[in-house]
Amino acid sequence: MESSTTMTMIKILETILKELQEQVVEHMRYYIEDILEETKWNESFSKSQNKLVAAARKARKEIKEGKAVPLSQDAL
Image (cartoon, rainbow, N blue to C red; front, side, top):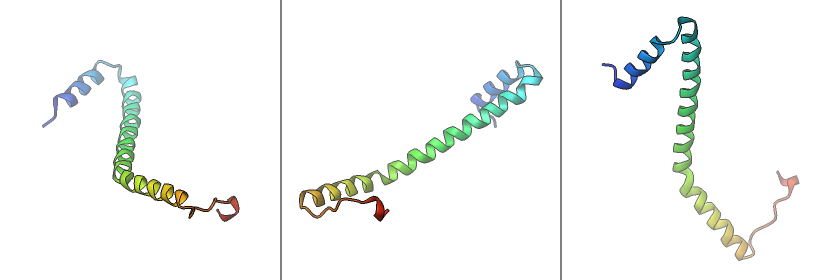
């Protein structure tokens, strides 16, 4: 069963000239791909945020205790 949102999109497409429908659909494909990629990024970031905070705290602690060593570009 199609949702009301899907039906709305179909109705909008039907009002557009046939020659433009494929172009509109292609734009929608790219738009949806972008949204899906952004959603994946946000999910990945939210899952790793606690680890990033812990790493930052550890780094601050090591700096405070004098255990940190400056990073040289040669070491990279």
